[in-house]
Amino acid sequence: MKQLTYGQKLVNTNFNPSELESVGICKKNIATVIDQLNDLREKTESPETKRLCSIAITELQGAQMWAVKALTNQIPANS
Image (cartoon, rainbow, N blue to C red):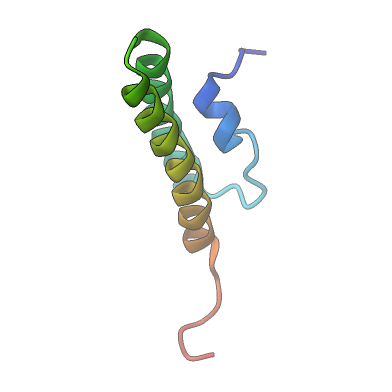
């Protein structure tokens, strides 16, 4: 089994019980951005850049959760 990246672990790309393609795509895309920011955070010497990357990663985790909720919401509009 292939080792997951940091971003893939954070968004739990292997968890998609609804098996919706849209959820998989969303998680993959957000994991890619998280990996980009984590790479920058590890390379930079700037404490401010490290802090900004950490904040962005945290916010992306939250955004991913809300996005998946929206993608899996099956409640009819007139309910």
